[in-house]
Amino acid sequence: MFSVMRFHVPAGIAGDRVIPVKARRHLARGEAAVKTAKTIEWDKPAIEKFRNAVRLAPRWPAAHCNL
Image 1 (spheres, rainbow, N blue to C red):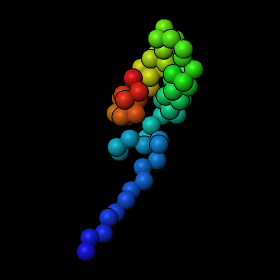
Image 2 (image 1 turned 90 degrees about the vertical axis):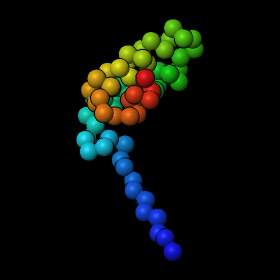
Image 3 (image 1 turned 120 degrees about the vertical axis):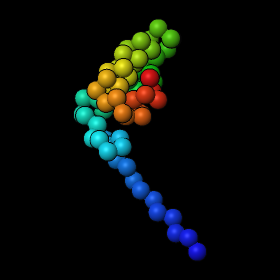
């Protein structure tokens, strides 16, 4: 019989590093901008927010995936 271990990784952690609050804010604002975008041109602010999140937390997969 095998047992399965499950681990929960909080949203503010990527690998062995804690994600800065500013990076999390940029990601959240970028996600909100994507939800409200009506045309491709309206995505530019979201892209900029995601770039800022990647710049602040380069090892954070969520920031890269959204960008």
